Length: 226
Image (cartoon, rainbow, N blue to C red; front, side, top):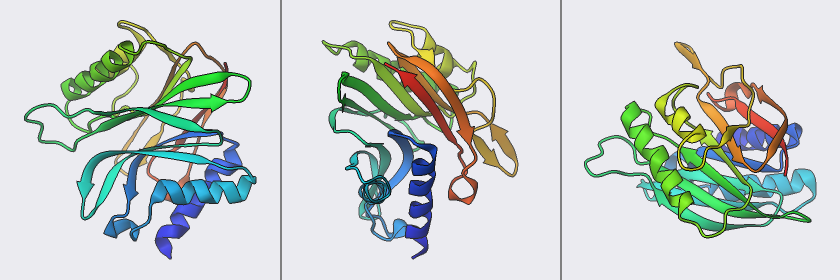
């Protein structure tokens, strides 16, 4: 099946890159267009086969679609527990609804690590700025704050209002990923719009991997010391 072929290629890219935690956007769960597949569960199963270790998966629904759901997912080679599924919708919004998924990752010998996956609006910088402020306000209300890593599609470039809000504000975060390179590649538009941010972690190495036909977004990765 062609749909599983592309999922297998994505799992292979993740395995070959040696990743242990993966943030995914534009994920389908049991929709007609994905062949009624639970994509996060399928990918976690394939990664378990490739690595010989159990992979966990979480999924946050942005909105229902044709009997299934569309949203964000986190895959990890360690146990994780969902903490927050935050709708980023605002009253009167006419563009696609977005969601933020936040979890605690339980890494042996380290303890809980906060991990979050975001996907901001494709239209209007003011909308994206509102979404980032909503994410940071929710995180700021948490009683305990472990080391933190967020990743996803900002739909804005470095220097945009949403990017600046990520690295400033109530608790500024550091950009963890590479400083150069495009992460989105369409025939008429190329840009860096996918980013990784962190607090209480130190980036050791990072890069961007061209994923070819599996996605119009490239894979942005970082190796961190916690």
